[in-house]
Image (tube, rainbow, N blue to C red; front, top):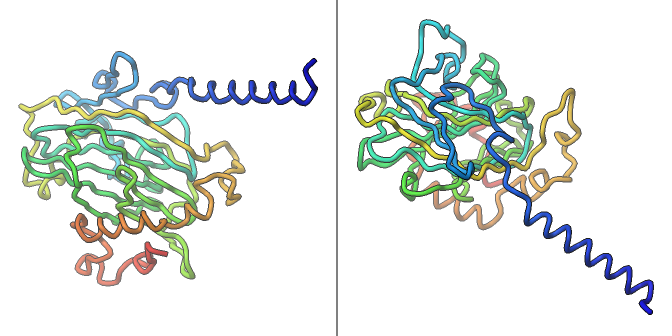
Length: 319
């Protein structure tokens, strides 16, 4: 005879094993589960297994200029067109962890910008909030630059530029954003390269914490500014320019009208707990190394551009 207690323990073990095996066997979500093509669908491809996605840029790719992220107003899609291709999430989120692996355009990519960003509007409207990773192409042999920026109610001008400590065209690397009501952190391969704070005695009036955002990725021609301030132009003989994406991951508060409960600070989710409000000790060491070695532009140190520095520049990323 089997005792009732032994039988219950056996059932508990079976349930636990089934739960673990079910989690491990869960298939990765497909591109179609998460994303929609924004424009130039004929320049979007997937690998045979559907797990890697490719955006390509050539002279035939067209985007209405109002859909390019740095324009604050739609100028008119019939008369002004730039080259590009892109996709966006089907859902909006407010706070969470957002991550994607990218491999950037190799070779001579001067004038080409690959972007991975969040935005509160599907088109770059005048009141949008936005959080940007932008990868600025180069002439062959020159390093890629990564530019980050933050917009609040359509106003940007919060650029930072970094060098990378690897060649982002040789293999995939992970680019992530941690967003809660206390900080925005930009990560490269889990290394924090930028911290945009919203805590302390002085709140950051420029912190984007009110509007849910879609996630986007795109590739486009920006040879009027992207490489050496527009001195280096896109060499279309080298087209197509191809950027690659895989392993999209989101652990965040999916927006549901009128107001999902998860946007409130409940500490129920790891990205909304105390440990996610600050860098930990190891992250501070990595961040310090980045600040010493890789920062090449910081708007908070540009006194020619900002004789009176924006208020958020007084908030310490170390707090």
